Image 1 (cartoon, rainbow, N blue to C red):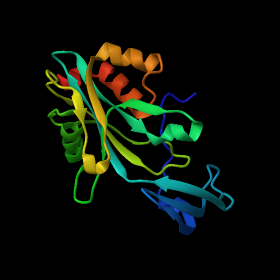
Image 2: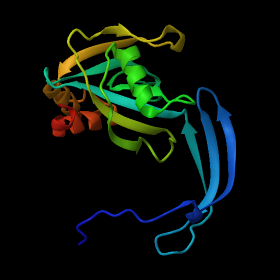
Image 3: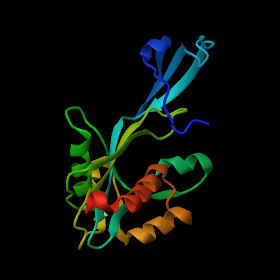
Amino acid sequence: MEDRLIPTPRTLADVEIRSRELIGRGWGKLERFTFRHRRFDGTWSDVVQRDMYTIAEVSMVLPYDPVLDAVVLIEQFRTCGLVWDEATWLIEAVAGIVDPGETPPEVARREALEEAGCAIAEPVLIGKLYSSPGGYGERTYVYAAKADLSGIGGLHGLAHEHEDIRAVVVPLAEAQRATEDGRIRDAKTFLMIQWVAANRAKLA
């Protein structure tokens, strides 16, 4: 049994892209990739097709107040549940699209102000994640950041982006309970809360 998890060294030389076709465009884009890749035994896979939907590159941040031992979370309507005939107003961390010329930390600071009305200190990178790699190309930079959350909350969002956002400050322990009882259903937010709970010292 190995005691370390070591990713297999891979580069784009281990992928042969036969075609990349745009098959749909709306808010995001749907692309069809035809490719083969290097297998773990050194041989090449069969040629396969996979469709990937991508909106953009995203930056997320969970502001944490070490004095209050609290975080700010936001609630907003998300379209995802309509696929399953559910009304999905989800509780999440602050997030926004990385526009051309912006860096992910800059977006984290901007979105914390726009969506929660709070200023944050230098964001601490938790990870660079793919949220649903089987069919969704979104790449997300996930951060936590120290913040003064006293007096923070209320309704926020940009009208021209059709945002209707409720920000709420809750004790970190309550946010953790929300990951356990089903109130928090966004996977990245789930991870961010658990990371902050385990790494408070990095945000003191």
